[in-house]
Image 1 (cartoon, helix red, strand yellow):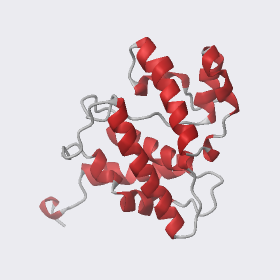
Image 2 (image 1 turned 30 degrees about the vertical axis):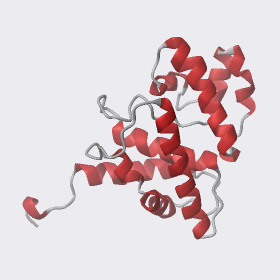
Image 3 (image 1 turned 45 degrees about the horizontal axis):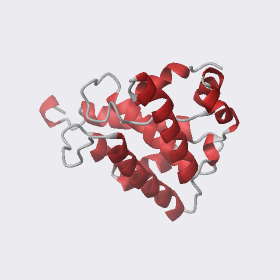
Image 4 (image 1 turned 90 degrees about the vertical axis):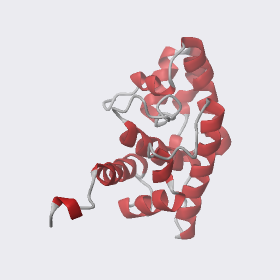
Length: 182
C-alpha cells in the first residue's frame, strides 16, 4: 500500500492509544470493562470529535462550560455501557474521559481543552492532596470507582476552588500530586 492511500494517520494512532490507556486506567475490577467496550463507549459518546483540535463547534471558554460538556459525555458513556448490560459509575466514566483527553492532548499546550480538562481522579491523587491540604483531608477516604455525578462534581469544584483559583494554576497542574508509584 502506498503512503498516499494509507488512512492510518497520527490522529488515528493517537485515538487508538488513548482508548487503550483509558481502558487500562479505568476498568480494573470492572466486570465487562474490556478495551473493546471502552472503545465502543468512547465512540458512542463521540468523545473523539470533542477532543480533535479542528472541532471548533464546541468552544470551551470556562471551567463551567467544560463541566457541562463533561457531564454530557459521562452520561453518554454510562448509557453506552448500560446498553450492553454493564454497570458503569460516573467515577469510571469520568476517568475514561480524563485519561482519553489527557492522552490525546498531552504535549499540545495550545489545545483548547488544556486548561480545563479534569485530572484523572483516583486514590493516589486524592490521598496525596488530602495530606497536603487540610480542607481536602476527607478525600483520602473517597472510592473513585463508586463516585456518582454529584460527588464527583463536588470534588472537582473543591479542587478548582482550592487549587486553581487560590494558586492561579490550571487544572492539569494538580497532577503534580499524582505519581504512578504509591
